[in-house]
Amino acid sequence: MKVYESGSGEKPVLLLLPGTCCHWKENFGQVIPLLEQNFRVAAVSYDGFDESEETEFPTMIEETEKIERYIRKHFGGHVCGIYGCSLGGSFVGLIAARGNIRMDYGILGGSDLDQSGRFAARLKTKLILRLVYPLIATGELRSGLLRNQLEKSRAEAGGYVDAFIKMFGAARPYVTRRSVANQFYSDLITPLPSKIDPPWTEIHILYALKMGGKYRERYLRHFAHPVLHELNSRHEELLVCHPEEWAELITSICLPERSEAQTYG
Image 1 (cartoon, rainbow, N blue to C red):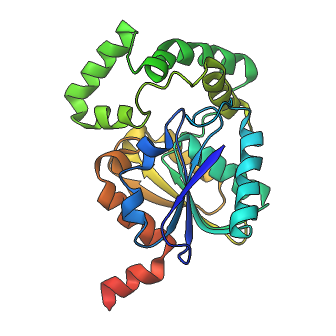
Image 2: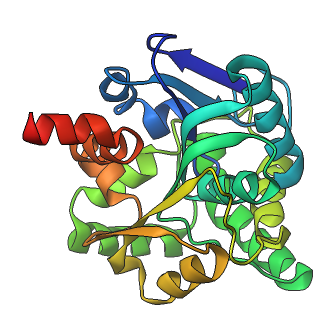
């Protein structure tokens, strides 16, 4: 696992966790310069998904432990905020539940928090490998079914589809099938507790309403007092299509005093 830091070391720390199989720079590259104005930014590059390492993704718990160790070693065990894009939101939930480090604000970016039994998870993982792994390894979609679905979605959603796919990054032949399988499968079978409520953390969720109503129930089940930011958008649409608005929202969550000063000063 690598962590890429930028911004002033005197500013509050904001940790960024990528989505499923995403490359950290493609996931957050367009918003990091915007965040650097107010934060010391630390973007995590998971095991198995960084071109500078020869590693494979282990399990969600093992990767969570590595993230926690990094925070203890480099930030004294305390960060201002952690933002988890999609799968990254599962890490935010696990970190909040484990209570080993302190974060003032944990933010989930429209995470689905989907969980399955082991048998169903294996079937889903095999399907994902067949459909998605060629895109990750070669940068090309080989599934005709998936290509047709994407073309249909492009017609309905404009530039969102291409912006979302761009988060994965260009062809990455160094990413192994095992890393993809481990990440997807482990996320499905790693239980997230109910009513997570660390006393030192506010949980915020960017709830993309177009994902569907069932996700509200999941958020309220897993977190005792989540702040839901209801967005009339698709999954992570604000991040990939409107980076300035996304950065403003994240800043207003993590630095509310700054936001109030700008509004009323």
